[in-house]
Figure 1 (cartoon, rainbow, N blue to C red):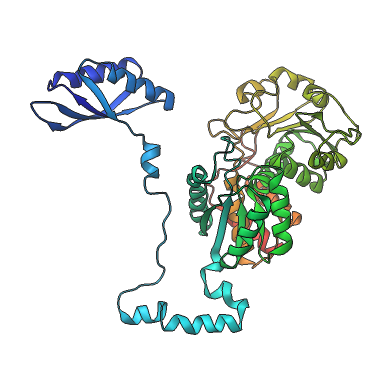
Figure 2: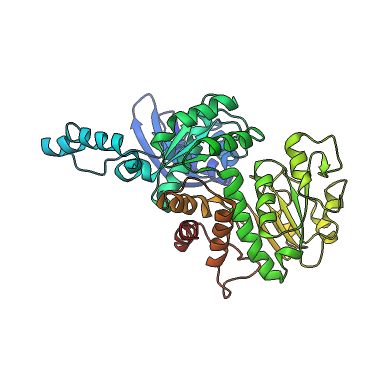
Length: 446
């Protein structure tokens, strides 16, 4: 906080005391300016969260003679100027360098590519580039906040691509939520990229966008909110069932949430051999004999719920081995887990607030996972998408298949050894150095 105060150096101590009394930890106080009229004081302190930070600011402002001029926190400071940049891979020290990297030398390369377009990936950035495309309609757990507000998230995604797979990714935030316009925009920019990562586009629009792009482009199109989530969930489920000694083909599963992530999870589970999945959404348990379902959910119901279970979430959970939530906070009461089969597995993945508190779920479930970093078994897409695209780019793939995704899930699961596997460790850390390489190899060499 930058404070403007009365020209009384005693105010510094009063501010420090006031901040401490409301739980703040003062780590630095500097008098930036001093005059007969006022002091300018910079106070650095630690807060538990954004709400606590506001209380610290109010405590300082409440002191006589103190005005809070401006505040900042380290998250916002980190974002000043953005999180990514373009840097040159070749030196540009003199005329000779310039003549090769740009004109006239670059003209020879362009003519060669016009004659042999198959070499574009080898001789340009296309071979290591991914477009991270959003319309800002479903950003994190924040909803439809638009393309500008989505840009920091897309920048972050690009930074993760670079950090974990050395891929150059570019945030593309489109100022349209019209399916036709989005599809056409991506088609127009596709020549510059080796892959398309769709991100934070709301369902059901995302399904059609992905389908049409896959049909028309000769580079892989991957909707991370769907397929990245599904891959990591499948990896975690594989290991969770190893812990409890159950087989994929014999378990009964419940998936709460029929949106992008839920649909992809169900699709991958069925491809892996799960035969009994009940999907729960706002209409209740989706069933093929329910003629009132909208088209996307009717399609999902047609391949799930073989026992035609109807009713609420608790009815779906009766005797189930697995619960996977990608829906909304608090939809699952912890005591309902007692109705599930012996040694139940619970993945509560809604973010930032899960379907059930993981600590409460652990009182009933044998294995619990969430999307949170402050509990064991975090389901995080970072485990999947960098390695997936590394493998796709290296293989010069034109598509990403269900078989590739199953191999990626098996690769992530396999990073956890038998000696490491336990109820609190079913999935490796996103910083495990073997994960991107294992996933890329599975994609490339399967």
